[in-house]
Image (cartoon, rainbow, N blue to C red; front, side, top):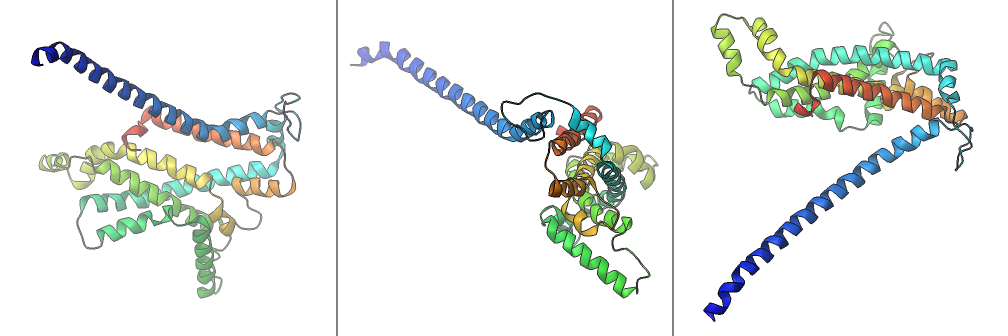
Length: 291
């Protein structure tokens, strides 16, 4: 019996190896198929909106009767879209700058120091990411009303540009704290100690050592914070004043009275702006390092 089993042992081993290889190959194919289906699920709405923006007819049909750029020209003729874009751009830039100025020191404090309530402070700063936008907008509106009541109208913040920026800053701070803290997690603090041992003060150490190391997180936070502010609808609905409108609000108001591919064209331009920001940011700072 022992002599009979000897010749078959290599064949058994080969069969086991081939079976394991086939299972790994099947697993890779299944993983690639799942990733492809997920990507298709994500891209399908974007592809459909892009196709819709080039349809010639006002009410699209399939098969389409032709393609045109007329809906992109309609954007330039709609002053509400232009004013909304300019206001969204202005609010996004200001809110991003102030949010970075507040969020970077907060992230440095959380990453470098150990103190009572550190975890609570970190969760509190990230809270706006999990709270629904309608709740935040309502809270800000009530807060601004209470400020005007308490000051007898001497601080006209309700419906003002400052009040709108104030609400959008809350969208930038969580991104800044999260991404800068993630960057600092891999930062070697002995570099700061070495710089200070060589005579550098705290500001010089931060500017020459710490800042270049956390720059990818700062750039990524600025990009994500700006996109969150630029495309925000819920908070803006509660805080925007008379005679002002952001681009998301302008789109919503347009849809109340008319439905045509102009909205699809506006959406495509928004996607191009965000996509360009992502490509430019990744060109100078690899987002894969922090995201």
